[in-house]
Length: 214
Image (cartoon, rainbow, N blue to C red; front, side):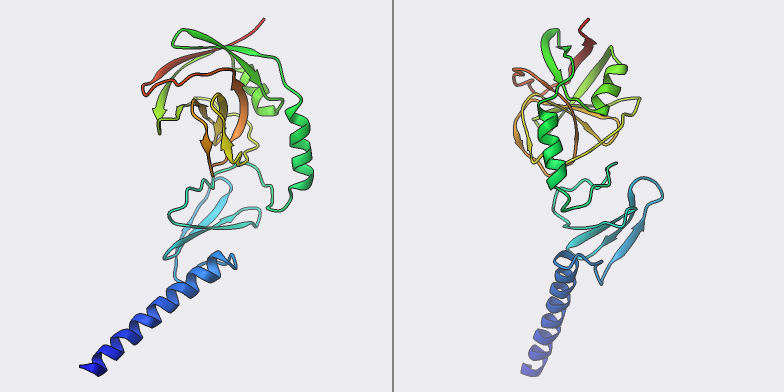
């Protein structure tokens, strides 16, 4: 009986050790999991995803690898190819762009008018070129309204770390999102603009009309 118990503990210890080693070398060393199921992607910026016991390792077409825990919120679908660590110049450029704003547009949400300050970027300009537009935007997560548009926009997605109520974001290349609550995020978006003094929009769907100010 004791011998059988020792063997059971030995097998359990080996299994725990393998799981720990597999997770450590994937997450800390940013390698592919040893025990994995590989999913290959034909389109987009992802080449493949290796599914480990506790982690996913994403391999991108630009050679970058990102390993995340299975329970982490992470969106790998992005258009930009910015490498981790290249922050000095980009942060400087972002700070400069913060001061440069494009012309305003008006927005009607369920018939109430708000002012929008657009970002000075290619995505915002492309969106302006599609105006006027009217969308029925759906509720999600008690903090945002979204719509998958029937046209796509150029992207330069980044993780903003924090969403501010009133932010207008692009998720992927055709999902328009209006946030009406502020919170921290791990997702990547391209910012289009910001709605001034946006209140809580409630939990239902909303009708949104975008128009240029002449």
